[in-house]
Image (cartoon, rainbow, N blue to C red; front, side, top):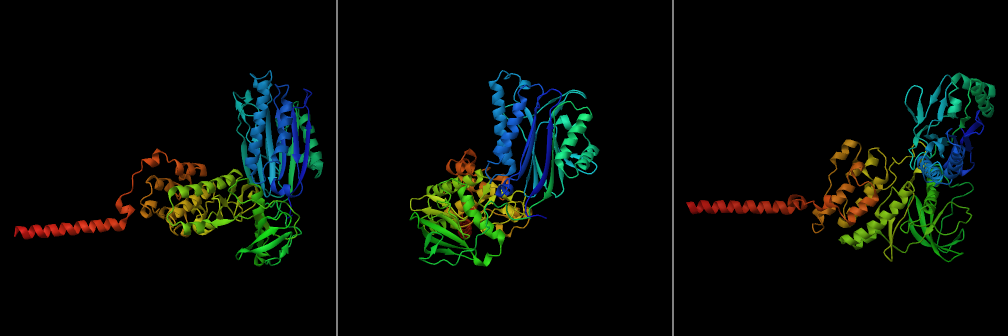
Length: 578
C-alpha cells in the first residue's frame, strides 16, 4: 500500500449530431498537501437540449466546481464544501436565466445536470443532480451509484425533475463510502450510458490495455456504433493506491523539523528570547518569550520529548497553530504574527495577560448571574467561530479559558480540536473518541455515539453551572457511563438547591442544555445563549421546585418540627381531658 493517494484517469467527450457539444467535463489532480486535504476530483455536466445556452451552463458548472471546491476551507468536509459551491453555482445560473429572454421558460435557460466524484483520504464522495450517472465497474456488471432525477409520465415520456439552474435553490444528492485499491468508476452522460453495458465497458478496458484514455475513446466509439446521436462524455477513474491510515489528513508538514532543545530563561531560540516557563506537563512545555524582530511577547509551546516517537501526537501538536490561523474571533487565541521558516517543532501564539477561569472561580465563589452570563457569552462566541468552520473544540474546561485584564475572554488549547475536513476518510478519526478532560466531556462520547456541536454546548452549560455553584451538575456520574442505558441513571442536581436566590427559570435552561441526550438540548450554542439572556415563556412559566427538592435538610427539619409539635399537642390534649 502506498503512502499517497494515486489514481489513473481517462476521459473523452464527443458532440452528437446537433453540432455543439453541450456536455462539459474536467478533473483536478493536485499534488502536495492539497491532495491530502481536498483530494482528487472529477466532474461532468450535461446541458439540456432545448436550450441554446446550456453548454455555457455546463461549462460554468464544471469549471466553477473544480476551481471553487479547492478554494474552500480545508477545515470543511467534502459534503459542506461541495454543497456550498454548487449552491452558489445554482444561484448564479438561475440568475442568468432570469436576466435573459428565457426568464419565463427554464427549458431555454442556463440549466444542466451535474455529477462529481471526489477521492479523499480513504473515502469516495459523490455529489449529483440530474440524470448523468456514476457507476462502479465490476467484472460482469455496472453498479449504478446515483439516482436519475427524472419524472416519468409514461413508459416513453419523461422530463428532467432536478438540475442546476432550474430554480433559485437545488437539492444535491450526496453519499460517501470507503475507497478500495483497484476500484474503477465510470461517469457518463445519458448520451453515452444508454448505449453501454458491462460487456462493452470490459471490452473497451481490454482494448485500452491499462490506458484509460484509450478505453474512454473506445466507449464513445462503441456508443456511436450502437446508434448514439446525442452528446457523449465518459470519464474513467481507477484507484491505484491509498494513503496509509493516519490520525489526520495533515496540512502541516513536519518534514525537516526536529524536536527543540530544552528551553531556559534568556536562551535564544528561532528568533525568540525565552523569558520564563509558564507551564509544564507530560505532554508539552509552555514558555513566555519575546520576538526579537518586533519586541512583542509571545507564548511558545514545545512538545514533550517523551512523545517524540509518536507521529500522530506531533502532527496534532502542529495542528494547534494551523487551527488558530483559520479562526478569526476576538475570543479565540490568535497565533503569533509572522510566518517564519522553522527548524524545530513548536507552536507560537499570542500572550494573554490575565487569569484562567479556574482562578476566576476561586476568586468569585458566588458570582452574580450577570457576571457569569458575560463570560459564557464570550466563550459561546468562540465556540460558534469553531462550529462555523466545522470544528469541535472538545476540551472546554476552566483551565482552557483565559480572562485578560480588560475582561475579554479567550478560548485556548486546540490540541483536541476535531476538524471535519481533516478527519474525513481516515478510519478512527471521527469525533467519537474522548479527546478532552473526562469530567467536562459530554455523555455521548462515553457510550460511543460520537460528538457534534451540541457536545461542545453541553460542556459550555457545564461550565456555566460550575461558575454559579462551584460544583458539577452530575458530579462524576458521567465518567462512569458505558452504555446508552446508563444515561438514564444521570440525576441533574438543580442549581437552586445550591443557590436558592437565583431565578427559577435558570434550571430549565441549564437542565435542557445538560440533557444526557444531545437531541433534547438546544440545537446550537446561539440558542443556549439566547435562552440564558432572554428565557422564553416555556422557562418563565416554570415554578420553583418544592422545598423537599430545593433544600431537603430544611424540609425534613420542618417535617420533624411539625410532627414534634403535633405530638406535644396530642399529649397536652390527653392530659387536659383526664
